[in-house]
Length: 188
Image (cartoon, rainbow, N blue to C red):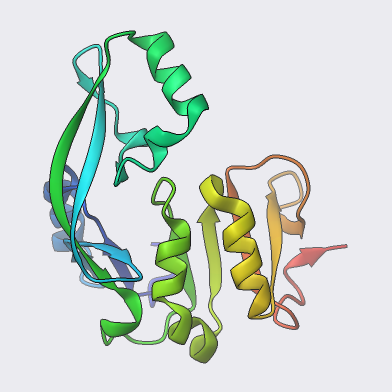
C-alpha cells in the first residue's frame, strides 16, 4: 500500500462486489468492508443495474433509478441495446455520521447520482473532521453548493503536474478541500 498506516473503510451496497471486497479485506488488515451503502436517511432501498445485451452494466447502477433518470444515460444505453432492461435489487443504506467510525482524512464518493445524499449523511463528520472529499460529478452543482456552505472549495486533479488546480472544465471527479487547508497541494 502507498500509505501503510492508512485505514480504509469501504461501503458497498452492491452484493455482487462483496466477494472481491472480502478478499481484499482478508489480505489487508486495515481494509474494512461495510456491506451497505450510505445516505442521509437509513433504510432499505431499491438498487437498479442496467442489463445491456445481457450483461450487467455496473457503472450506471444506482439507488432509486437516479442515474437512469438522466436522458444522456438512457440515450447511451439505448444506443448500445435498444431493448436494455433494468435489474432491481434490494439493499441497506446507513447514515455516515451514525457509524461511530474514526475521524477520516479523506472521503471518496462514487454513487451514481446520489452523492448529495451521502454528503448530507456526513455533515457532522465534515464539520468536525474537515476531511478532503473526492466526489464523482453526477450532481456537481448541488454537492458543490452544500460543501461550499461549509467552506470547501472545488478543485480538479492535474495529472501532468501531479497536483490540484482550481476547478474548470470537465472532469470525472472533484476534489473538495476546506479553505486554508489547501496550502502545498495546489497550483495557482
